[in-house]
Image 1 (cartoon, helix red, strand yellow):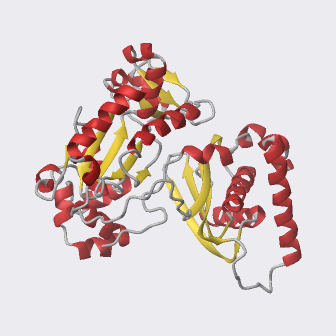
Image 2: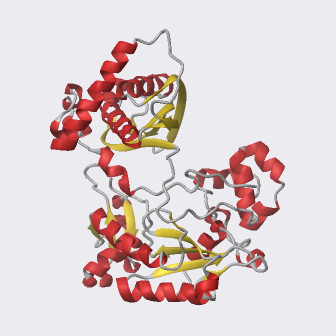
Image 3: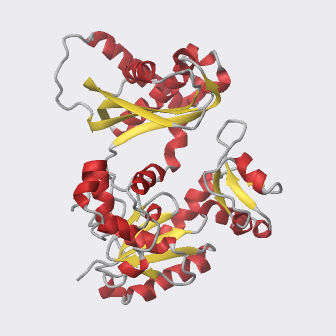
Length: 420
């Protein structure tokens, strides 16, 4: 039996939850947005009246207000969003033991085996949509297909009241005319690369020789070519399945641009401590440190380095990150945002080669210092203990990224790989 995968998306999730809480917001242009003064000022979600003004998710609050001066900006209430989306997904889990979240507002449901229990998948998708509306008060869109990628494309079509059904017989008519940027993992940079090769639609991507895409774009080119042809066979994770993280990281848009490595170093202290603490909470160590940087001109740049020994020690992560920044970033253009992550993760305490050039006594002292800071912060809060250098520019380092990371989307390939 062919697979039957549903993808269900809560429409403009954050904004719709705010409208559910305060129904009067449905009548005015409204968006959920970040903190403009702290440089987190982007649109996270917008309602239908705001959409009519051309307001886009991800644009700055300033750009949005230029389009609609009367736009009401509401700060995000993540606890509410987590609560209501968990209620929605509890409905999904009544129909399958394979429900995989993709961020807060989206989920895949493997309905293949459930057809024997509940019947026709189109009817059940409509039933789920109706139940979410009646029991929770939220509107959702649904897609049905034999693979996860096309199921997501179906929900993106936003068919009201029914799922968009993409089959092996109709996908060339329904999917191939769409813009290539509509496909999962085809972002702005990939879209530009495809445009340079004369590829504008998903159909053109599907029919382009795979070997040329792989040669030009590596494994990513091969992957999106497979997606365009419906060859995704990645499974839907089981309910409550724990997937080990492939990397752990945090990033921050700084409250003001910085013009030197020494100026950004206190921020990197906070980021490194948060990353190291999260690694320890997962019981993981890693030996690839990556840094991502965004300039004041909004250009992203990234680099990474493999270190000699796996680590979860904040000072070791910081030392490598600062070497990458000093060696690769040109501060003639000020830096606006920075991120640090560690990958190639393995369980802590596994066998590793000792390094003759590392002072193991000093390393152990730094590790114990990190553990002591974790204990103090767990008991008295993140701000209860800080490194003195982070007080030199308190507004710049006054953030707690360890806790703020929890609402970010789950990676599509986290803990698994696609079979081609």
